[in-house]
Image 1: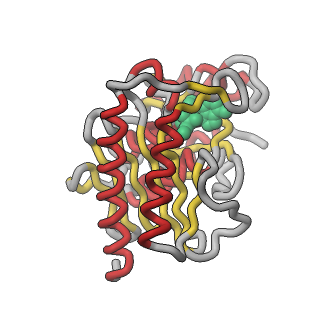
Image 2: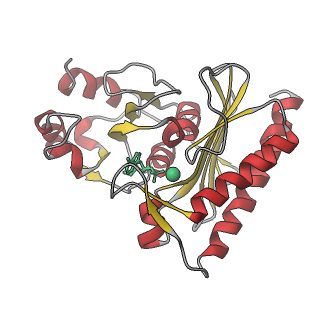
Length: 264
Ligand code: 2AM
Ligand code: CA
């Protein structure tokens, strides 16, 4: 990485840790909880304040960078030209509210659409997963080993029960046989953490039907640097300016699942 990107990385890591500390402090205070698109889509004052924290830092330090943030305090972007920070201040807000764990700060930094830096910070465990393009993926300064191929029968697949029951986005019969063949399934309720767990080898694949760019931007950089594959459910590249189905997997397993279960 050149000096410019080293500097961006240093600031990003510092701000992520500082934002995490602030989130921890809010556990002592009462949350203001509101719903967004539907009764299950939640936001709190902490989501908003955390996003504003990052935006103030970025605007004063890197005035020419752009920001796409879930809570809408960033820029309205129609292209990925230049340097773009894609931020989810709290991924897993429902977990944050109900469990005070299993949530993360997620950030991906892109240059002309190419993922350069990724961060997923599990605040409660003080675990920072991050990656720098071309330099690999790390968990708290320890490099993560490159992901190795695995078969469906030996895999743990992260998938929410939503997609195996009647829903608006996929026929439940598509993924049900995959769930049967896999060794096991899990669901953690934070797309960012599920992607971080793939990078760390704790999960083998993750499938979900409708995520926004801030849910997967950080994870995209981290998983790819760890040697994993990130596409939509049909094996196509993700669109960083819109909603996508998301299919993240170790190598080998990605091809096997696509061939055996996904037809379109
Ligand atoms: P969020 O907590 O940042 O909203 C939960 O299954 C995962 O899906 C979380 O990563 C959550 O991100 C994401 N998600 C995206 N859109 C959602 C929605 N409309 N409702 C609930 N979760 C959503
Ligand atoms: Ca969020």
